[in-house]
Amino acid sequence: MSVAQEKFVAISGGVGGAKLCLGLANVLTADEVAFIVNTGDDFEHLGLHISPDLDTLMYTLSGLSNRETGWGRQHETWNFIGALKQFGGETWFNLGDKDLATHISRTQGLKAGATLTEVTAALARQVGIEHAILPMSDDPVRTVVHTDTGSLAFQHYFVRDRCEPAVTGFEFSGGANARLTPEIRQWIEDPELAGVIICPSNPFVSIDPILAVTEFADWLRSTSLPVVAVSPIVAGRAIKGPSAKMMEELGIPTAADAVAHHYRDIIDGFVIDQQDAGLADRLAALGLETTVAQTVMVTLIDRVELAEATVEFLRRLRREK
Ligand code: FO1
Image (cartoon, rainbow, N blue to C red; front, side):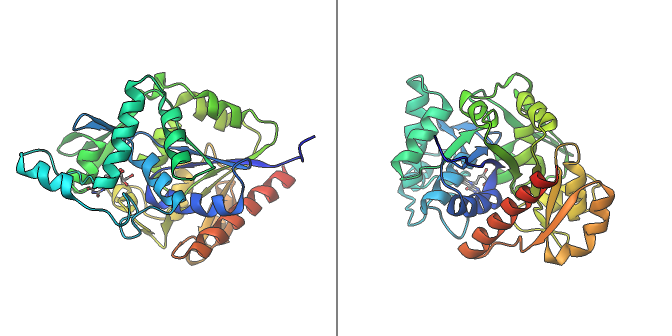
């Protein structure tokens, strides 16, 4: 008889989300938490299938990540991209020599007929990760960024054009037909599942693509389990990345409660930073439970403590349901 366990799933994309996932991986075992990750940033580049958010989480959980950028590997060298430049190749997307091995291994696995979930599991295992890193779907979903100067593939917007164009909207092509994977289904149908965490990722280009997988969004909206989100906005600013800039361009107030409003039909609770404690009343008006924590994660302890506070919040909501 297995000891009755509580299991959780966390949905994440980008560098900010990966920080909380690292905290959760330090608080919960591989049987207790799984990470459902955005693949809307994926693209074919130089003949390789590149999955940036899967790699950011893999490198973060394994301790291999570049601490300054949050993406790519530490102790990286750039001989390949330097040589490619000499041949006039595309060098706007910086591929480090060690990082290249990840993309080549993934591309070979996919070409051999493995699913993105299977390839990701093999790579993660080979760098010593026990927790499940689950792509949101094995079917392609691609984030398209609509801007005042036209539509852009995500990496063209984010890296090549450095998030400069003003966004007018987003599209997640393939989302409607993208199926949930058996691996995710196993976690969300597990009777021991106790709650869902939306990590402090960019709501528009890291979380919304995951919600574009219709089967998953339908389950999130219908589950009686508590769902909480951790605000990616603190005191009107994004910790990292273009979340606040996008909100301004979309005419949305750059405030934590505006993010809660964005998630209003799927969340029961919202985690805000101490600096935003004054927003608790506005969140209550949205019908949301709120908990105040330090959501700015600088150290590993910050990551662990935010993870603990978030899990405790879910437990409280579960008891109150
Ligand atoms: N982000 C950049 O801003 N510049 C880059 O040159 C870059 C290269 C890169 C290579 C591999 C990888 O996995 C991620 C990379 N990223 C880069 C981050 C990438 O754009 C991600 O999509 C963002 O982290 C947003 O999720």
